[in-house]
Image (cartoon, rainbow, N blue to C red; front, side):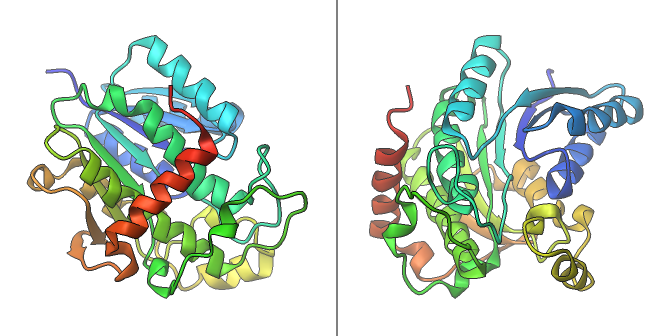
Length: 279
């Protein structure tokens, strides 16, 4: 049997790197979708050296740039390679910048880009006997009391996106997974959102270095953080469940807002308007 193929964004560092290394150790085929070939090349070499049976390839992708998302999806689909599991892992926090499309960089990276990427790659995932879409969210979504839709508007000047904005994007990750599950009901594709724990990954790279150093003293390792997406991406017992939320490797109840179907539908409609048609 052909080993399953896992398409992982943000896979050259942090949780993403630990995840593709764990998948490769199982003999899986892994696609590392990242911005930098230079920073990804050592990861590819390490995988091929340690796990000769695994196949690993690089795809150029800046998930915050919608043109890059479309180009990467088009080129990958044209290659004919399968995707059994898409893991939307790339993320960032604490930014003060705009994306190439004029969106706040945190929202572009954590929600808008992954939304478009998922829509574009979904036809290939649906060809899998048991496709999965895994969103790496966060327990931070529990903090959110409401969504101010202005955060998704294009801007002329950037503003600092703090932890509250990060939390909103993680709520969007959970809502996206749940709404996608509703839309894919009756198909072979299942979806999951998860909290990997507080992990010392480079998602905090936009914060001042002293804050990064201090915060990481109390966080999990990337390998520990990768346990949850690995579970959601591979566990056979999850094949019959969809749209669920997991805290580490246990199913958990998300926030009431995350279970609001009307809110999820509105988020989908608003984001779809922003990114344009998926084809």
